Image (tube, rainbow, N blue to C red; front, top):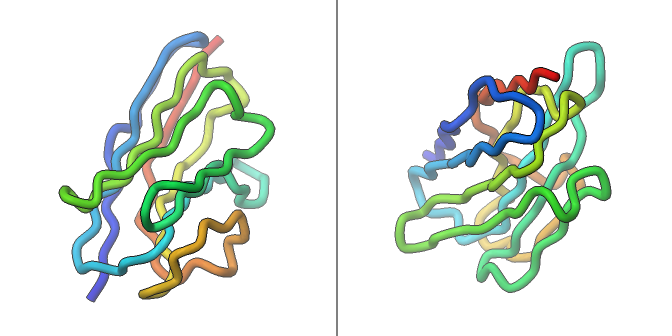
Length: 124
């Protein structure tokens, strides 16, 4: 049984930083991603990383500010968020592709495991 548990969300002023963590129970040996959903909006892609960490991709809206990484020894995926803006306010979700799907993907429909989400609020 695979479970994903996010942590690290909170409230911060514009320009601040947060680091989200996603602890994975049950090895998936798969690519991971971060998505977010703001009130009244659809869930959107934020970042993805391949199983070996060699390939990453970030949404244009966060490039240069956010960085995804993973520690396979700790079975944890991170999202470092710098220079936060009010428009980054959302619930952030960690997701995993099915076992042995190693390639990074920005498509939410290619993820089968999801965390419960963690709230990030950025005030101006």
